Each structure stands twice: as structure tokens, then as C-alpha cells.
Length: 98
Image: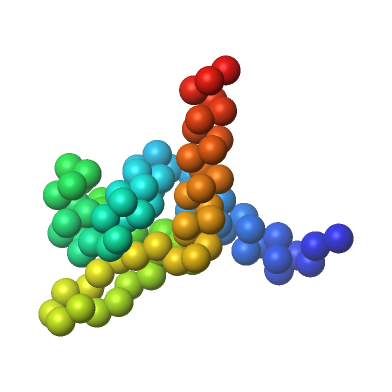
């Protein structure tokens, strides 16, 4: 049986995925290779505050990470984020082909 700590981490990951906008952010980051917060906001037509909150939740879930590139902060997928995005895409394909 999994430990409570491991199950809590799994719960946090799924909470990070529990938003269509956050899934769209993950997909956009995967396609682009990484974006600044303002680019995420612009590409997805979100206001900056909303984009920041979604990115914060994705980072807390371990699905994205931030790295500095000069004066910018770039958001990219983590290994876990890439894996969970693959699962989400496959699930979406199953739903679309029912």
C-alpha cells in the first residue's frame, strides 16, 4: 500500500491538472519549449494575474519549473509534467473517439 505522503503528492499533481486552462498551459509550454509569464498570458489570452496563478499551481504540483534566461523567467515542463501531459492527451483522445 502506498504511504499517505505518496498519496498526498499524487493528489497535488492531479489538482494541478484539474483545470482546462492549466492543461492548455502545459500543452503550450510543451509545444513552445518554454515561455515567459507574459508570453503564456498573450498566447492563451489570459490576463497576467490569471496566468500567474495557474503557473504557480502548476509549479507547486511539480509539473512546471522556472528558470532565468537573462532578465526573463522562463516556464518549462518538468519530466513529471511531460509524463502527465502525455497521459492527459491520451485520455483526451479516448474521450474524443468514444
